[in-house]
Image (cartoon, helix red, strand yellow):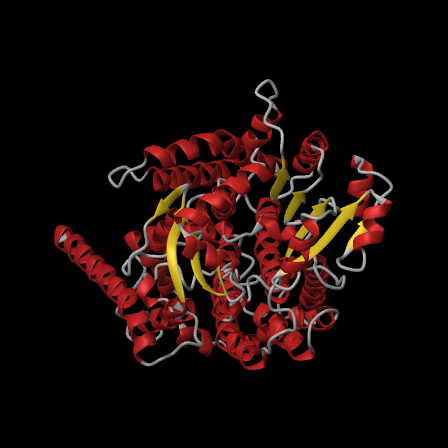
Length: 619
């Protein structure tokens, strides 16, 4: 009889697993079939899970297999969330227009206000005897659903814009800070006897993993093949290592998973690696986690508890009040409607709320009914906030960041180039230390006169605060010194004029080895004359006033994966080469475009700005 009962339980567990997998497959199909674009997939999965569980159909109940897969799902979800952190946003941003408050500063001010508002409302709940764990409630109210925010920003193609960057930074802080706070809170108020200071060990291990695998990861990329998938093996090794360390030092596994994602991001994985990890996570583990979250909500029991029912609108109000303080912060730089739309999007929360509630139940500071109330309030934010954001958002004036180019040296070579580039997508400045040149050219271009070309004077003038620095000084010895200073300032691209090629001098080779792009007038003239003889039509394209040869880097993920023949603008250009991972790829109609591709093409100069806005828009 016992064997029969065990066999029956195994069969029911397998059926439940099959139903969950079927639901994970059908949900996105239904969303696409009925054109439901405003509801995040995660929210739909929770709702379907509620329908499959004790709230409605009683088809699925938690079992050991589903619980283990669900636990893996939240680990992978937090890992992928860690990989979404864009550390470049925390760096000082170069501005080509009037100086405005930076996205990083806005985000820090905004999230500090969110924390204060969350704490104030949480202690109000405690004072009203509605919810006693004020510290825990503060953490939950301050969370932001980073995944939902990123999806909404990608849909509007705002990730490269100051407005989108500000929202993204606040969302990132809304996952990082509550996650660390939750871990510390659990360590302090939990049953573990381990010191909270042991939590620092996990950060040390994360740094060691980053330093240990930075170089080997590049080697893995060279020897990897389809049957080994070294990048994926390394990703899961880092996940398991940090999750294990987190649990051993008394932290939560989700902190280890999140740090693992940040480590993986800093290793600079290839785009294919990111795609494979995302496919594995959102294609298998994460849907199970969200469906099982819905299964564990017992709606009849929740609605039967009058206090829990009354708690739902109160908690929803808490999520709103915690984020409404962002409106005046957004107004410091953005339009009033966008201040409202951005605030609405930041109100979205679900990703970290669910694991936080699990921790709260384990600490016995929250009941199952209260957990359900928090979950339903979070689901409502996910249903309403993205719709409000999409309805209110209007385009800001600054739609495209101009490339900042600084010329050090104003002369008969650099001035004409600067004049031509300033008419397009470039913000041009020239620097000279010669009074005569300044007097001659200052009416023709944006020139700044410096007392000397010393390192201190150039740094003080901001000469190296550019995307591209062109060293056009006639003296190659001076250009060599200027290039060294530019390398020390970490300028992304350095172009140096270098006329001398003394075989006994190592300067030319030194600059080339360090990544400086070198041009030589004699070589350029020889190449130009040869091209004029061998390829006269190509030369006409180069010198024509209407047509030209251009290079654009694909940064917009909307175009990644498309074949050349399916590009919406392919009829207006002729693609000659694609430069990918250090190799040239001969383009064909069925050649797929990858994120990061350098597309070399010819076309009308009037179209280049629109094409660059589309392809180089970070999304």
